Structures are given as C-alpha cells and as structure tokens.
Image 1 (cartoon, one colour):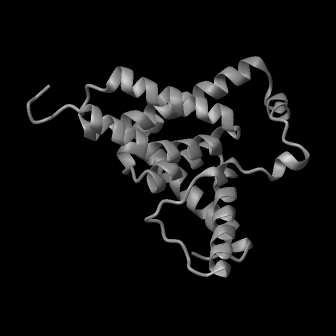
Image 2 (tube, rainbow, N blue to C red; image 1 turned 120 degrees about the vertical axis):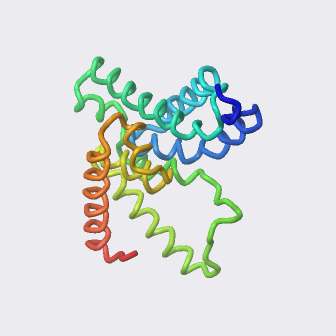
Length: 194
C-alpha cells in the first residue's frame, strides 16, 4: 500500500460499523421482509468486513460494506430459492392477523440531532408520511430499491453504486430514475408531495 493511503484504525472501523448498522438493518428489512434474516445478514456483513477488510483504508469501508451487504442479501434469496418456491417463501413468513400490524422498523430510536416536530399533530403527520415513504420503498422492485437506497440513503455516487450492485452505471441511472418516478406516483396518489 502507498504511504498516502492510511489503513483504517480499529476506532475508525468501529465507528463506521456503529454508524452504518441501523441503516443497513432497515435496508435489509426492506429487501428480505424478515427481521431475523435481516439481522443475520447485517451481522454477517459487519463480521466479514472486520475480518477480511479491516486492513483497508477507511474511505474504502462504505463501498466494501455495501458490496458485502448486497451479496449477503442475494445469498439469502439464493438459499431460499433452493429450499422452496417464492410462494412458499412468503407463506413461511407467517404474516397473518395481528402480526401484519407489527413494524420492526419502529424499534429505532430517533437520533437527538434529527428534526423532530414540536407539536403532536406535526409529529403524527411526519410519522404518517414516513410510513407511506417506507411502504412505497418496500414496494419497489428489488434492483430499483437497491439503487435508490444506495444513491439517496447511503449517498453513494453512480460509480460506487454500480460497483456495489455489480452492474453498469447506466443500469444504476435507469433503476434510480424508475424508482423515483414510481415513488413520486405512489406518494402523489396518497396526497403526499415532497
């Protein structure tokens, strides 16, 4: 390694993992629709990054982590396909009755620096808008959802997103454009404009 590419310190690696864990979990929940599987995928991705790539420069960690995470999500679906068809996979989730109302994403604490409206009515409206956005994101096709989350949630540029997804930059642009149009249409149909 050249001297100008300092390797990530233990603290930098630890801080990176602490900062990315909640977003990565939510991203996995969107993808696999199962909290326990999402936790496993995120923990496995974090361990792999620490074990195999801790000697890499700190600025490479976000892209490496996203690549490992996306591969973990794909591996999850490959294993599921081997065991059963998609229909039996969704049936095995057991989403019936009251469980349909449970939202594992509500367990996250709001960061103190987050913009929280002062009045209860504003907080209710914000939570309803966020729920609608999350539902719309979850309803996107897998590749559109991946591209959208990497570009606009993880703040990756087009080339980083393409490398993380294992596709061309043109595909990333197409997926993001389609995702943005689909989200806007879905939210407009619910009377939400951002």
